[in-house]
Image 1 (spheres, rainbow, N blue to C red):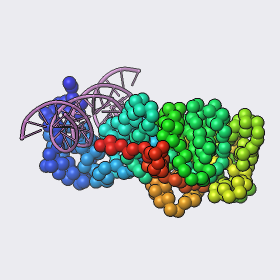
Image 2: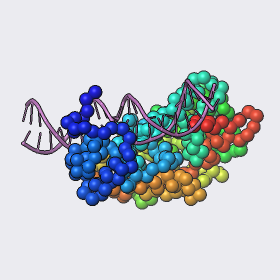
Image 3: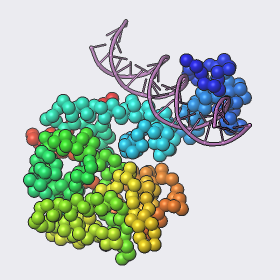
Image 4: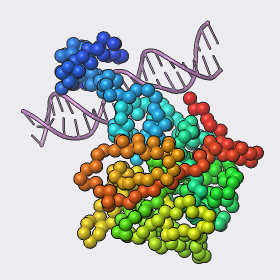
Length: 393
DNA sequence: AATAATGTCAACCGCACGGCT
DNA sequence: TAGCCGTGCGGTTGACATTAT
């Protein structure tokens, strides 16, 4: 097995670094910087190759490394980013200050991947039980948001056609649609369990191990959002909105009845330039202004702002878009949600001149997730045992 | 208590890429 | 243009730690 060219001509030490070697490397780089890595070992008095020095510095000795175990937010973000970027660990690590690609990669391989595999295996072998979610050890994660905002009623037949064998209970309202792996569940506010374990399992079977239970496995965080355009100026909705609107339109058309609540308005009024008003909290009389409820666009989606007479179509990086948008928190008590977002924002690159300006973007109203994730907060009863949390370590 | 199995993570390896000559 | 070199990246290894039997 040949060595790298930078160290092939010299006798180099291999294996773990000693404290003395670390000290030499730290002293040298602190004083002179690393410069050309291939010359570092000689100048620093180390019997190592430059590549080894570089690795040791970047992955271990660098002063800005965070150390310690990964936080909930970091784990969530890694999963999210991995769904977008795949095994591009260096890219993922750029969104995690103080973490290295190697660290992220190891964390994924030793921890997250196993949970995902376990989830799949559990699903295959325990048809009568809801599978453990790979993130179920993180009880604060907002994996399944159930809003008290009733927006979209589906009768059982319709649900059947949409969601396969899912047998919806009467107090379950499916609010959003089958856009890829998304399904948004909403409660009408009545008490009692909304989904039996069997139903959860059926949802899981239909939408995969992550899709159903995270609403959208690609979202960070998973939130209900409305686009609200205060001033009466054209609101340029991203393409993902139109997809969702199309689903609503189709729903209304297929039902042929009609309209439940504001669905008609939702299906017909949402066009570029229309005013979209959020209706959260107004569930006493079920009268809603024109509204839409949709999930945040996938981070992996390119948000295409439609062309106008004065500007060509523009593709926006959703990450940058989130960073530039004006975000209002509907639930100040939901600090976890807020912290997640604030943290996410802090990892965003600064706005570039090519990024959309805030005035081009919709305000985003974030709805609280309520109640807590199903896996941790299903009410106790004989028929609806909370899904067991799995100690995966 | 001894051993095996499993998990973690630092370090290595080979490859790709870009800059330079 | 080809070859060399330095750098960065992702996959893999292996030493050590921990847990299970």
